[in-house]
Length: 420
Image (tube, rainbow, N blue to C red; front, top):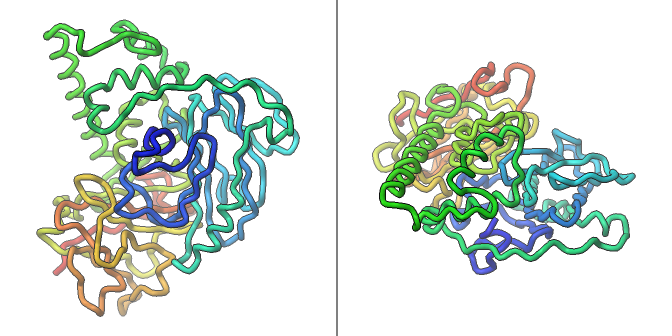
């Protein structure tokens, strides 16, 4: 939030709060604020400050064969609502987003109300791009996305503005050193949910919470050691949970790590693991994400040691209503990697240009160096180091064969194998 909507000098700045920023491109290796970004769909992003009044998000008509979605994700990382092809269809409409404490009338014309559990929230729009020449069409759709305060939507005077906030400077180094300072700051905008009462009480006992005074520097050496060890232990749990999300299927982890408040049901470790694996991931009904760092035999993927292949048997491509992709990331940073052909993924919109095997199967060549001119169409460039890959199934089919429910579905991703 700080890099996107607060710090104009962050290098990742998008727009002020309550203004839509439309990316007229897909993400590349230069986008480093969010780990595991998709490079399939140009993003439309809004940081929403809901403190003074609700916001109304309007979408245009979108042609029936083009997938789009608008994901509402709050400070608790709850996906509390969707607009789009799967959730609401491709017709135009107005939708209202309200803060946790808002109680008011739903205006005529508003199709649905979405309630954030925190006062700050985010809207993440994804608009399908068919190919590079399709970008003007995506831009036209993006220009139809609108957000405005409820008062402007109703042509009424605006309520008093919310107080200005002095955001603390934050970066990856500071968040490690001053974690509890940021936690105190963030919690003031996140009213305690029913399932949080116990953990909030425990935090308050040691001075952590909105307006609290916990300061690591003031602790005794003994307590500093205990807190430090606790944080280290907690981080190790998150890393382990992230590495073992879902079920191991042919070397892929297939499960669900993103969803609404009911989905998490107070499982903070799952929520943290989902954030680490790919923050702002969709709920599984919107998109399901098999993830892997290993080949089919469980050995770590490493582009400096091996070339690999991923083969979908004939008639067994990922079963989706929208589209699917396989995206390559650096295994250490979980960011997209720079490569000579500027290709970060292979997806189903590329199928007409991909080469099939004689038996109708489709092989993707996963390696650092080019596999040769006869195979380059199917080349997914890999880092000269450890590899992390994400498969994305947008709007997965529910009827068999299906990847749903994640980890238990009738369709399974094929394993990554060492090239012969």
